[in-house]
Length: 122
Length: 110
Image (cartoon, rainbow over all chains, first blue to last red; front, side, top):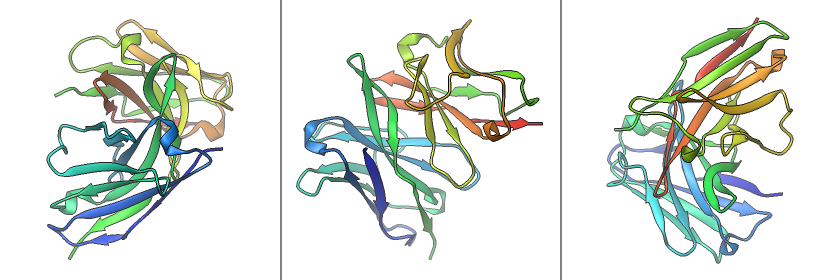
């Protein structure tokens, strides 16, 4: 069974960089799939942030692209999120997720972490 | 900018049937967008219900079904139960590695 677990600071200061890691168990990242991040501000809906493959191919939400880096570390079987120049608007629960594939198209999220709240405040 | 639209809220009686929809601010939703649906209860991570328009995720009861209705993707819950009271999100795959979430529908069972 694939399991994902987020970790990282729960409090980040404005203008600094938010950094989170998602540890994967039950599956080797180097075997394939895209791995991504989704966030949810308090009381609001879900927003896709970005996804990455161990080959280095990455995709980002155009609205966040200038501030986001998603990368995969196959040696540790984990992937990470970096979001720079954060503001209070980046306060959210951040979920890591695997991009599921079916019939040759990878188009949905099939496994999710439990989420971690990151608050941006001085 | 692409906006995926969902009803903000919906209510259904226990045992009843409800259909939630997922549209586009401009254009029609088709199977080419590989619509998927997720259920989320407060404080919990999303749970994958439906992918590729109408494929149920493992362990999802068959009273949840997905389809295309007219120009929208649809999630139908047949025989609604109290624990179906949740937020439901659709996601459209826009291609080129880009996903867009809908704003979510808050479903009340009463």
